[in-house]
Length: 305
Image (cartoon, rainbow, N blue to C red; front, side, top):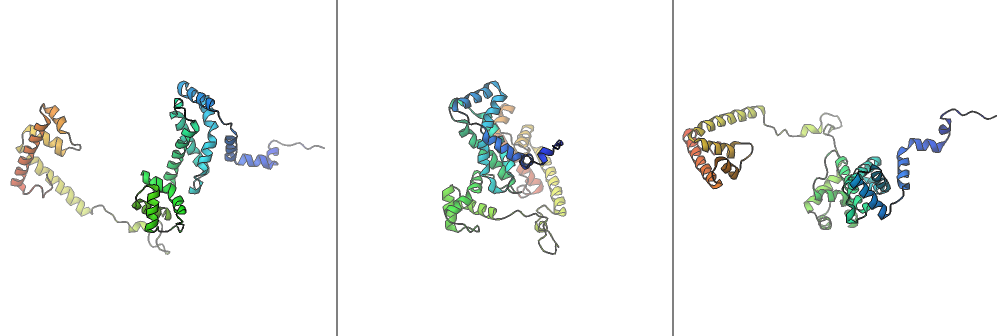
């Protein structure tokens, strides 16, 4: 007598179905790898339809065909310890950027053009997330981050510790960066992140952040600086009374503002040449220095001008 099967029992008793259901990422990868490749003419047609007509179906067909390229490039960055699904998603961002910027009339295969954008997007993600401290910001640092281990293996420098001067020189020449950059990056890659809240003794008596120096001024010093700045401002205001209105305007715009106004801009504003503005500025500074010296002593020593 046949037994009835309740809803859901087929999946529960089928290991293959259960595995596929529990691993959607694997199903996604399988689907992407099964997508057919495009011929050059198809690729060009889809790219033109997306660019000129905004055809989203064309965009989907174009990007779906090259998802395998995203997966292939993302797999090369697995060694950095980041989730593979995140690497693929970042690669997808690069693929979409490539689709938005691709110019079919240049007669370059879309896969060739997209590979650069995909790799760049994944590299930026790795640099942002490999460490809590931003690792690579300059072109030289990025080059070293992604190629230093490979070059060290090529020159048989596999101890992972401090590099010898000879190996640093070889690496710098190979990657076209400075030896100082090589030394910094090799030290950075050899070290691991450490929380400032981690105790620096087994007893837990203190934390690493306790060793950081507070570079801010002490409260007494901050009060003195504020008082001195206020006093200097008052002295300067009183000394400005010896200047004409035009001289005061030029000094304020050229010396006392948050942004320095150019001589040319002031000349247009006052209806004079920029050379005349420079002359007036020089004369005003001379008068201002003389006034300050007669009242309060050397203004340069006081930090006024």
